[in-house]
Image (tube, rainbow, N blue to C red):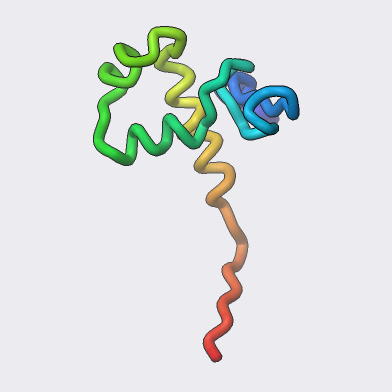
Length: 78
């Protein structure tokens, strides 16, 4: 079952070339993750991007969590 937060993530080929975005806006999930990883706080992001809501940031993090789940990682050790 998809969480309510993940419903905020939209994928539309007409918006940002189909990249996962926040609520159909032109804010890719990748942008929010980059901002967070650069050390920006939620408050700083929300101040810089007034169209966004706290739940959008949480949705981006949850989306990234789902993408990072793997059963196995195969590497070529040769």
